[in-house]
Length: 257
Ligand SMILES: NC(=O)c1ccc[n+]([C@@H]2O[C@H](COP(=O)([O-])OP(=O)(O)OC[C@H]3O[C@@H](n4cnc5c(N)ncnc54)[C@H](OP(=O)(O)O)[C@@H]3O)[C@@H](O)[C@H]2O)c1
Image (cartoon, rainbow, N blue to C red; front, side):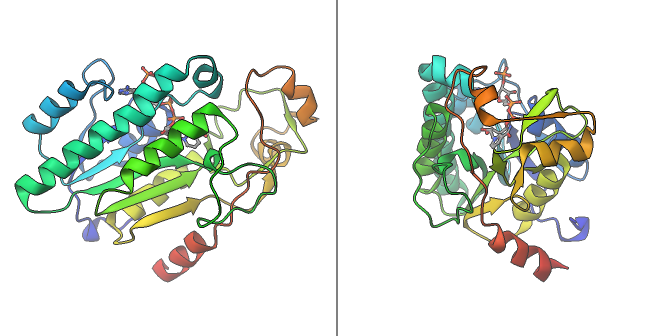
């Protein structure tokens, strides 16, 4: 989808580059110069380290994928989720504002958020709907969004994705609905939005679909089950329908074509 001849942001600071989404993005960003320190080189929860990293490096855009992203872990240890998702994001936002003041230009900031900021009950949530997360992870991601909104040139992407080549479950629920998309589609959307002038919040996903129906496309041997079967296995609260209204994104894609 992205046309390299219109790439404006050549030097990109990518957080979370060692993670599932970040590593797919890195592979797709051959046209760019990408700075992608792993957590050993830069823990975004450490204010002083983030300050030094910004002082020593220059870039014209940021894609922020780093997060404590495992729901069970965030539920068991919310402090880690607060440090990475809320404080870590705040540290990046503060340094971005400082750097923008120094260079006299805005820095494009793409933030990866989650459909988990919605309440996950009725589904088809639009960007303007109330955000009442159903997990501690979701609350920390909403806390992150609050910081991002203080920037000038930002795009908050609310999404859910999966790797079609790595579906681990042997069964999935016929009564849990999302708008999740294959990771490759999300990578294309992120790179499109990196170069777009859109600022604000956007839902990125596909049509409302049950987990079972989606997983069966890529793993035909997967077995159907019900949400209540899974509830006993996980330690965190499950949504029933966290599908999103993705019409804004659909319109943007049509205009692009
Ligand atoms: N997976 C989904 O379906 C989904 C849905 C919606 C939104 N998201 C969001 O998408 C983004 C990427 O998710 P993902 O599935 O790729 O997660 P992931 O595989 O766990 O990757 C996250 C990366 O961030 C790093 N990280 C965590 N805390 C950090 C810190 N304090 N400083 C620096 N790096 C840190 C992790 O390092 P370690 O592994 O060493 O901790 C990891 O490399 C996250 O923001 C997540 O909230 C994910």
